[in-house]
Amino acid sequence: MNKPQNILVLTYWDFNDALIQTYTLPYLRIIANHLSPHSKIYLVTLNKNSIPHSLQHDKIKILSFKYFPFSAYAIFYYSYVLLYLFLFIWMKQIKFIHVWCTPAGTFGYILSRLTFKPLIIDSYEPHAEAMVECNEWKPNTLPFKLLFYFEKKMTHHAQYLIATTEGMIKEYASVRFDFNSQKNNWFVKPACVDLSLFKPDEKERISLRKKLNLENKIIGIYAGKFGGIYWEDEFFVWLKTAQDFWKEKFHFILLSSHAKEYIQNKCQHFNINTHQLMHLFVPHMQVPQYLNIADFAISPIKPVYTKKFCSPIKDAEYWAMNLPVIIPQNISDDSTIVQKYNIGYALQDLSIEEFKKSIKWIDDYIVNQKNNTTSIRTIAEKYRNFSIAENVYKKIYTI
Image 1 (cartoon, rainbow, N blue to C red):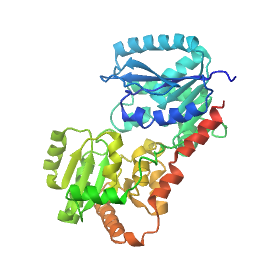
Image 2: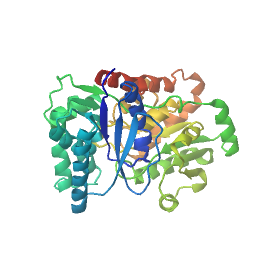
Image 3: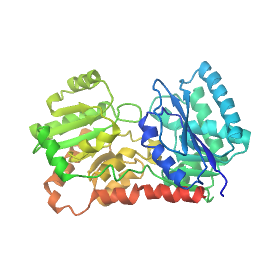
Image 4: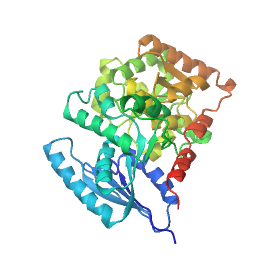
């Protein structure tokens, strides 16, 4: 009988957050398939207000703690959490500490040092510097200095690094943290997509378009937020430019958790016709049906330096639904893929002139759609398939 390989998985997210449901749990299920029958995966979540739903999986268990933003009390509380997890590691005979992203990696690094358990950093990409670039933190503040310090420490200490892009290792970690990219302890695993959930359905497309009175419309879509690492005013400037180009033929679907008042105020400020905008917030399982009726999508990520090393899950979902994407330059590997396969438009900058070019590109694409031989979905199948993650985890975890 194989010995149990119990794993402690650390995250910095609420259990009900999409980052757990779509960016963590699918991978844990893959890992679970490579563990011996009596192994367990203990998933740590930091919940704000929500109560975690139960998870029906015989190998995956939930450990929930309260989330507190950075403060003196938070330091005290998380010290207690660390002590609890330190004892938990020994009680449950944890063999690996597996963390998602570098904020959780800070906890993982400390616990790995204290317990001598191997550390695995998943979805490895910049966070401290990204927070500064997006004006969430200042470079001389304690939160930035602490996380940047621990990012370097965990980079050199980890048994395995699972980066979201190759550039994260060969460019960012090599330069920022003096990491030797010739080491063979790193892998690349971009954000993968559930191809069984995100798949085009022409019959459903026609039916829902008719139900929503959107027949013969050019429909754009964006599923996400504004501010932080995403555009804010720039998006509404782009939307106004699109309305001016397509006139009444255009309709846009915005799947976002932002308040109606926020969206309405932005539309009023930029003189956007709200009759041509559908603002909804739907569960992740319903997102594919709205992507299914769109003609194109937009990925409004700020083109700051650290975004070269991220991996937006939304791009994978758009591609899986066969949608061309408007995206800024230097976003992950995605901008390069868009240009290489001519499956969207990569903005050279965020000027109105470039916005017009992106809209014209989409217009030409739709007009010539019958002549377009490239299936965008095949790009998702090649670059964002869960088989990529399967191969990575198979090399790390073996029965």
